[in-house]
Amino acid sequence: MLHGLVPDSILPFSDYAIVGQAWSISVEWQFYLIAPLVFLLARRSAVALSGVVLGIILLHSRYWLGMGFVINEGGYFLLGILSYFAFKWLATPSINASQVWLGVLIAVALAAFFSYRPLSLAIWFAFLGAAISSKLQIANPISVITKLPAAQWLGRVSYSIYLTHELVLVGASALLLQVEPTATQFEHTALLMPMTIAGTLALSGLTFLLIERPGIEFGRRLSAAFTTREAQNT
Image 1 (cartoon, rainbow, N blue to C red):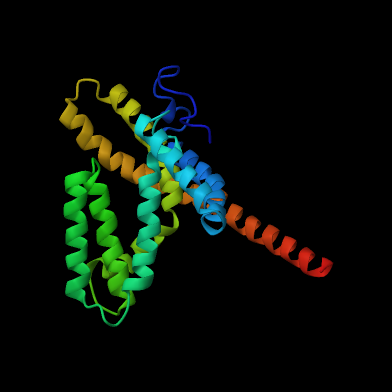
Image 2: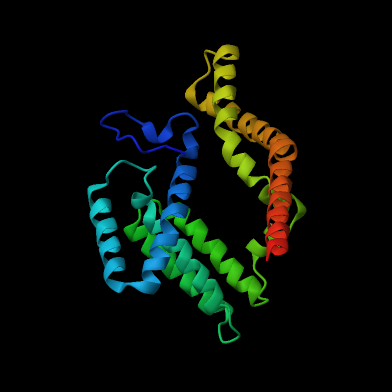
């Protein structure tokens, strides 16, 4: 969980060391440490909160460290927070389907103009619109697809997919280079994609069953034990 804490000028590509995609776990971990302080300041001291916000803006303007540094990804956490309130406040009977999807289109257009990750944000806004529509009992294709058993299973193992896919990708690519060393880049990619998808689904299913789900259940038991102990002490 220390990705990005060493500047690229000292250790190039440090954001992607060890487990490349895990840089985002580091960012989340940092956010969970900082967010309670910001929330506390927001409730108690406008001056202190303004100082923190100003410091964040200054750090972000210098792009200190890299992608694995939470300040540089703060906009996406803000987007997530705003999306929560949009889901909470906009999903009311006074909102209809056309208004929801018009809002999605406007958001996608703004993302295409201002962001260097417009496709990722477009997917986010589309699913947010689907969630709001579903809450309003408005049928939409995304909600229909996500309710399918296969989609539900993919959702359950999505964290395992996130952690294992790069391992499978690198392994499958190395295997293809040994088996088909004369393949063109197009041929290599055409073989690599289905191998990576199949391998990732298989491996992530196993890691979910053998590691992730037991870990979740252990965490629940541990939390329940602490809760019971606190209740007895009081």
